[in-house]
Length: 75
Image (tube, rainbow, N blue to C red; front, side):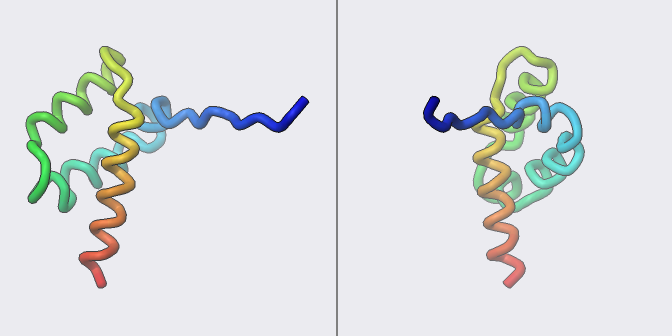
């Protein structure tokens, strides 16, 4: 068999072990302060946490962007 990739459980990480740190970064970072609507972010976050909708790809993208922007701003 050829090599195959594997899924990364980002959805469960964002609901579990990364919930606090990811939430802190997303809600207290540059994106939430200057670029995105906090109420929309809160809605997306709540829907993901309550399993109404899986927003893991969007939340992961926002988290990576937030970490990049915060690193750039600290230079």
